[in-house]
Every structure is written in C-alpha cells, then in structure tokens.
Image (cartoon, rainbow, N blue to C red; front, side):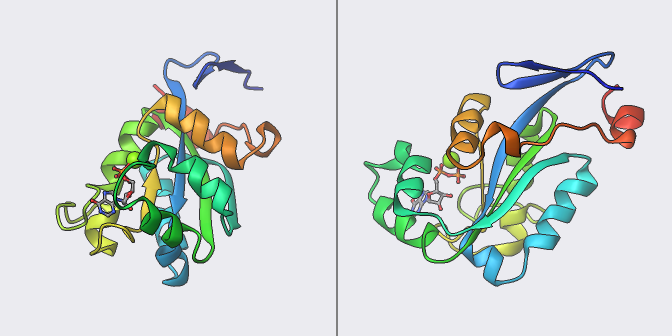
Length: 169
Ligand code: IDP
Ligand code: MG
C-alpha cells in the first residue's frame, strides 16, 4: 500500500518523485445556483487533480471574515462578505503536484473581463465580485483557508491508480 508522508503544506508520496500540495477552492454562490458545480469539478478531475474533501455550506459571517481577512481594509470588503454569505457555497480541497499554480491558472484573472477564454472565470463570469470561484494563492494561505472549514479527519488521503501511472512521474 502507499505510504503517505505528511510534510508542512505538502504531501510527499513514498516511492514517487512528485510532491503533492493542497489547494482550497470555493465555488461562490452564483456557481452553485447556476448549476455549475459538476462542470467545474469535471474540469479539475480531467486535469488530473485529486479531490480530497468537499461540502456544500452557507458561510457564517465569521467564516467569511476569516476567509477574506487580508481584504478587510479594501473598499469592496463589505460587498464581498455580503455576497459570499448570500447563499450556499461549495467548498473543496484539491491535491496534486503544483496544484496551487495549476488551479490559479485554471481559475483565471480576478476580473473576468481580463480572464482568458478557457479559464473558469473567462468562461463563466462577467463581474468581479461574483467571479464564480475562489482558489488559494499560496501553500501558506491554502493551509490557513482549508483549516477554517475542514477538520484534518475530513481530508481524505488516497492515491488514484492513474496518478501513480501517469501523473506523478
Ligand atoms: P482572487 O479571488 O483572484 O484571489 P483577490 O484579489 O484575492 O482575487 O480578491 C478576492 C475577491 O475579492 C475576488 O475574487 C473578487 O470577488 C473580490 N474583488 C477583488 N478585487 C475587487 C474589486 O476591485 N472590486 C470588487 N470586488 C473585488
Ligand atoms: Mg485571493
């Protein structure tokens, strides 16, 4: 069986060369009510990433403030909090080598006006506050963000056979 060695912010898979990272990804209220959860999960699955945790929740005001604490002085902060708590969001943890950079590229630019076609924001969003999706921008922030919403026991550790065969060489 695979032995998973936990390291700070990354997960090294014994016997394989690549190091897994974890990314926290949140599908914003508009993605949930527009029925885009499956479409967006499919994109990450087809890319070759591994889903480690997921749940549908309505964020409390406190959770929203924790998630976006680095933006607390920005002029758009109150709109952002109101929006993200307005209806349920879909929370996920994705794993894979370089998963932070990969998910950020797949998400696209913050303002959908500048997001490339083919990216999630480029394909599914037009406005900057309801821009479909949040994804962690660093390993450090991913750890902080996912710990707001998931206990360690809720993060599932497993290696897909295809990962071993094709993706982690
Ligand atoms: P990111 O989501 O691409 O990481 P951040 O700069 O971290 O972008 O901003 C967090 C969120 O705040 C964005 O996803 C967007 O919803 C909102 N936001 C960012 N900049 C603006 C702005 O200039 N006006 C309104 N909302 C903004
Ligand atoms: Mg950000």
